Image (cartoon, rainbow, N blue to C red; front, side, top):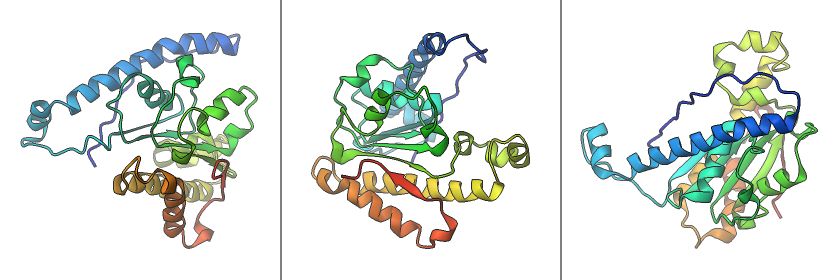
Length: 239
């Protein structure tokens, strides 16, 4: 894999009086991130620029271009998928917050593999609308290509590198219940992510569309043979 990681330059957002006000404030950030992601795609699709970066010609399978993000970062691949066909392989959403996205995401068909891995904490939040949940469960994409679920006992910040940088502080301030939980979650989420990525890499979409979801979950099961080391995953759209 060749991985590009995008830096964000937004200012820290203070608290707002209403949730709607917060969404309105964040919408320009989503647009800015989409433009940055599309500029990155411009670079990746430019053979000369890629050769200049790596010092030699780089062979890329442009049918397998995947984009991922965590929290508001997950809004970026959702937004790009609406406007840019160069995102060809799939999108991976890690505990996504996508309320500030362009509302056309609810009506625009996206024929890409989509995996939304949420946390248990996310499931309990009052502001999560049924419309958002339907999107993550594949309401406007091929349901055979959409996987959605969460890990019991998981929390939002377990997706971040804070787990590595300040593990004891996270436990102290209640961002995780126990550090052993964080380790189990990282193993679990990494296995699920890997299963999704490997299935995209090895299959041909749309030829293998009908078996895609089944193949991801079978590959995941093969990666977590010792269940004691992993958190329980609740899938909500395997039908």
